[in-house]
Image (cartoon, rainbow, N blue to C red; front, side):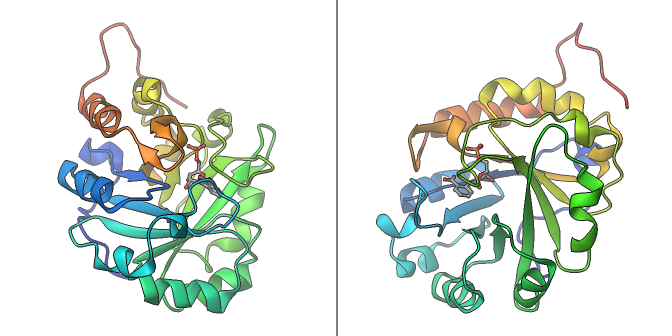
Length: 239
Ligand SMILES: O=C(O)c1ccccc1N[C@@H]1O[C@H](COP(=O)(O)O)[C@@H](O)[C@H]1O
């Protein structure tokens, strides 16, 4: 796995700090603002049908020029391997998020060059362990999102209950319709077995003014809320 910026060791639970990935960015100014805020990951969407398709408003040179501690992640859906690697090079990406139906073999090819986050789109009755079992060697990290026909960016949550008791043994991003109101649920999630591998919280459509344009103030408030202790009366859960 390539060296990431800004990464202190330890799980979210041990460090009481939530890494954040903001996905679907489409302008340089917002990336700088998030970098200033201490957001660890900036996601750029290279899936043409997405309303957050980054090349509509930012050329590769603009993405490449972005500096700072923020880690640049490229989101792809069943893209040709050579095209992914070309984009990584053109845009100076640090990680790729494979959000389609990519096979373990496909992920392996990409992970020979760059850190791979394999996204799994989950339905409420999915057997997560079965879905991920063939990807341990092929991907560096996992991401759990909600199953929808549009692949991602649906703003819909999956039932976190199917994850809570699992020993994932791979760092993962929690995604899928996470909203400003979810801060306490996320903190409660950290009491469960799966949380030892929770690497970062992935936010996208629920923090937007319009597709691709983020509400920076909302992100700032959410980040602050995540760092605060749970209000009295909200019991910590356990698996
Ligand atoms: O955002 C999109 O348009 C998108 C399109 C295709 C694949 C992935 C996409 N986004 C990813 O979806 C998840 C969840 O987003 P949301 O919170 O439900 O809006 C996130 O990881 C985005 O990177």
